[in-house]
Image (cartoon, rainbow, N blue to C red):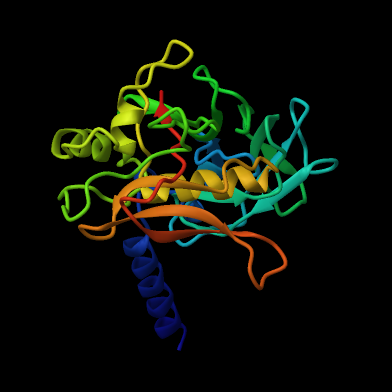
Length: 300
């Protein structure tokens, strides 16, 4: 029996030795967890304020964040530098992922300088603000002596501001205003769009033979050293009337636009008062032969 125990012990020693490695094979293994990527911070940058009127403007900014992330960025504005949400008016919107965004404010005062900053709010309730910019609402007098009613916020296509003069042009010394132009002729190429008034005027001046013509009176005008006046398109006239009225600036009760209805009629504007408590500015189809107020407009 002792003999068999000895043989078994010897065999086990041989097996253990064959499984063991040399010193050079010794290794240490450390489990390193995969790193969790950190989320980059969200950033916001302010862009140019546009569509500036006497009581409103459009604030614009850009936010950078990961795809799928959402944020409620906003703008804060006031009449003193470096406004914060604590003591100034703010407006917000919703933004998904990296994108440009904008918000309109309609609670501004005419002819007033405002300071605006964009902001985002962290989960801890901390506000991060952009650098500020400033702008001035319209409703002031322009270099031509008219009311500046519109400001793009930046120069695009060679101009930024639009002003309308409140004094009518008269074809004759004894009359008020003048005719739109010849009856029975439709002049193609005149459009209602905002920004088309100057082009409309040039087309009408070339195509209308009669001198009693609203567009010609505007085109020939030199006033306060400015000679680039034109007859506004229907949308230019309507927009300027409505926006200036919001700033308590009312001009003539009616006026010609450079936009036609047909060969015998063109659009004019007037204050509708019948049956409503507050006068409303509307467009109306008017015979081209009617004597109507002519208010020149210029852009610069």
